[in-house]
Length: 563
Image 1 (cartoon, rainbow, N blue to C red):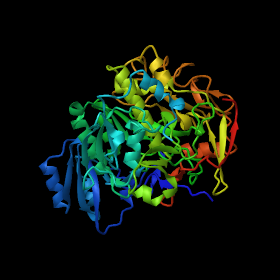
Image 2: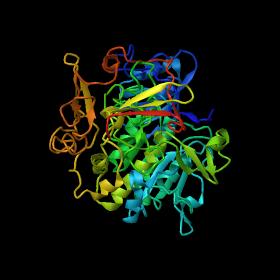
Image 3: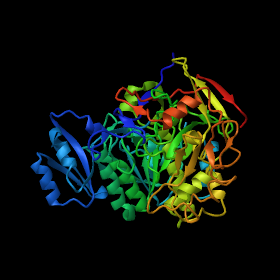
Image 4: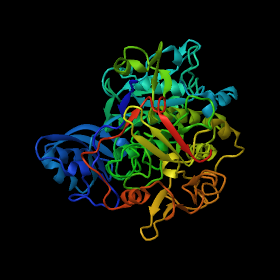
């Protein structure tokens, strides 16, 4: 039996409910603190309605808590506090929300140039030279692949988990190679091989970190934006969704980066095989990829060829809509299966999975973690080609130009377990389509200025239809001044074109994206009811699906419908 690599993308077990389910108890305490036992202490992140002052810290101290870190980016602070004092803390009038300092992990053949056309944009002069990308991950090793003319392009390094920014796990170095590796004389060349790397280490030697680590790294990236010309943040990591993105401190941090003008590219997660809730993997987008601002990336399998027509969905790529908010995700797909990139001997992943070693400093991994830096590199190329472009326009442009030619469905049979997984090429699986850099740079005009927040899916229990609408909020207007206006996204030829069909008779671009007659597999009705019903639960027994490196390598693949 061929040895495969299975990496848990998200750590922690989510206890999240659908938007129709209310938590019992104090609404300012997260669901995973509601059930906390009364003994011992817990590390929490408190978001305030106002910028916290010494007086706020003193009140927490009076409850037996200790200030661990101020978190100015989200008007918050991290404290260690007795569990018995949580209710009193939540009852403080200036407290907006209290959540644990949750654990976060990496969401785990260089990209074939013919698939995403990075060769085309490199030849056209878009190599990322002079543009900074903050890679918030397990660190980046100092390899020849990250040098230009004898000078390292790792221009800044900082660790938030102790030690230095040098990678011990291997994941961050692999991500960096996909994004900005020069190949060092091999064919394994990154999307923008001259971009500068701002190395912000938040994952330790086992691939683990916390919300606090990531939030501090995001704040650092914002503070270094002007100094290192940081235009993009790559987050190939995530965790479960426990509350609305409007309350999640991790989501609030990525929104702050977005508002600072940085394009934030995030992995969708690797939970597409999770059927514990009967959703066939729908509703499994992980945080902070559930945030409507960021560009959320799913993984497609390039089938180890340089052409796009044979590409199929990976079965592990997480699907939308997002829990609690029903945000339409992922936004876009990129190759993420069996990707060869930089990862030298001696690191944790190299030692644990020798079967994935390729040669020298190169290693093979799969996951939405690998697809994310492909899109982050594409964002850099788009910015280099259009220096005045906004991050919202970057997101919209990549989605508009994405390839939208797919089969109706495809089925992969896992060679190890014999279990078959069927993917339907709908809006919650493939987003706006597969990244096409050549098509993006060939566009003669940019999308209109305005918000590019991902829209929301609204389920009508009476008709059984699911329609798309804009994100509600004071700064978001559904109309002509929003990128997702009726003449842009919902047109027949743009982001979700009429040639891409969801099921047999529901066409993207129309008002209804999930009609009552849609053909969506034999268990469509059951899955629909679970995704939007009152019984949606990711209980404490949830086991997150795991990505396999060998997917489709020795698998039986069945494709239905014409490309």
